[in-house]
Length: 152
Length: 152
Image 1: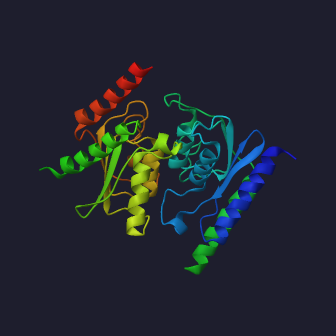
Image 2: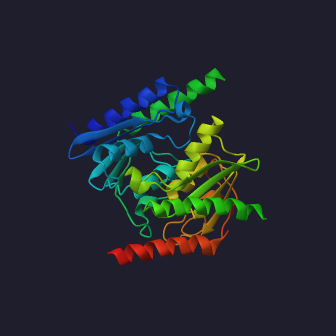
Image 3: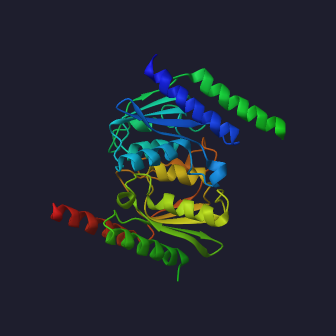
């Protein structure tokens, strides 16, 4: 199996865990040398903190596991295009590469509103590949928001 | 005393604590209704995690104190212009206003490289006032980096 599908499937499982906890369903996985070293999902509501996006949780977990904040040998898989905060966190963490699922036209900073990972003025840049399992990732989000609207 | 000076002085004390711990000296303070509800400094090296900038620490602490991730009634004072990650975190947290000390021409996203807080496409915008105690904030950073270079 295409390893991008394998890792994005794990990120999707994380996103589903978020949905089950009534969080916006976004999941993230960090891979080093073919091994999943961190997997996490959005915990904003549970933690009452807007910082707790899936990517931040995954970065912290990966850095703790490696005992090192420098993640240049790592790849991250996220179900949704990262926002400004998470893209900035990936730059600061010197991530090696980003794969994401669905584009985020309202907040995405890896190609949609901005393309921060390609900005040569920052001290780190990284390649980005979007659209991995796009329809599955997007469907999970639309179902979640549809459910929210129905509840209201 | 101008309250901006009062709060930035506290942020500077935090930045000095960071320097004493051999961290890049940046401090942040969050104020609500005239009360300092959070103060923090950069802990990147101690935590081995690139996410642990002063602003992130302060946002988490303020949200925990309020039991709410929504910080629209709060103001944040930071000694250095926030990077992409921290500016994004302030947008996500719906911060009311940002005051910062020194500009960051290499990574600043609140006027230098980008002006993310003013982007009408995001779901939150906030006013920014830079240059509060600029010279003191900048001097602390230059002294720190000068010391680092001498050690090498």
